[in-house]
Image (cartoon, rainbow, N blue to C red; front, side):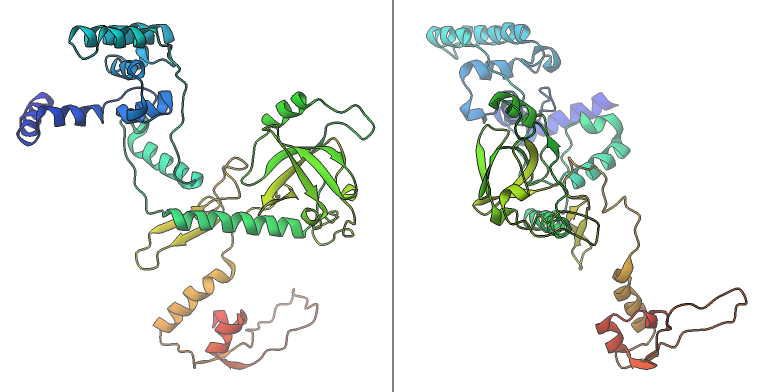
Length: 390
């Protein structure tokens, strides 16, 4: 039955398209290894180029993939990829598509192939993981193999703004609670400093979290500190970028404001830094986290979803997986339901608590004085909670 359907489909396609259009459609859909569907995707995956940037040799490599993309791709077996490329070039020469000179040059050209991840227009890792889970639940392993295109309602501008808002507010909150010290001490003041290669290798092994980059303090004086980054460059940290770094003592207490750079950092410390405008600031990986979901109120479409400060730091999606109290977020829904039942902004609400006698209950503390009847609009505007159970 499947073959019969394919035969009818082939007839219909030939009625609508010419041979070149059919070939173009085929080349843009065929699987060519490493989750690359189409020659454009293969050019990006294997060579990091667009199709028009490929050399004749690279084109021949891709042209040789359809027969066995898992066997002839240059990332799996370079020898087989070269042999297959040479077969393609020989056929192109014999059919008159290339000259002998072009053939000789392409055949002698080495294949410089490496895996190039697909270009990401913008980052939404928590949402991407949600989509991956949904696709796997629906289609199993074929979700990874059949070349699906998935479309979401996420918009780039709103997603980027949501991500920035979460990160900025988490960092601001964490900074207000004080500096918890360096992430690590590689050598102490007075000890032999590490060489630049050892520092760079150590930093390359560390992750980055959003705007936070790992760094090592290579020199420090009261006015300025110099820190090395993983790419081999160095940045300067001044007092302006670490004035926030009062020593952390508890969730409610911090130490005195630092007066000089060496009150905060010392040579040999592995710290975190981030760029603020054109300056570099001392930073730290936040111990708190947050999430944000933005919806279109007319359609319910998800416009942005951020499940945490950084996906590399924590893959736990606080937007969908966290069990948390709704807090005052429930108030608009309660008021909407109340207005559906006839409550208006002029309705008078009484906040006198309902009391019942309990022989085992002991009253302690100061009893709050009720405000008695109050218009609903004041209750809503001032967030008084005792009226919500009216």
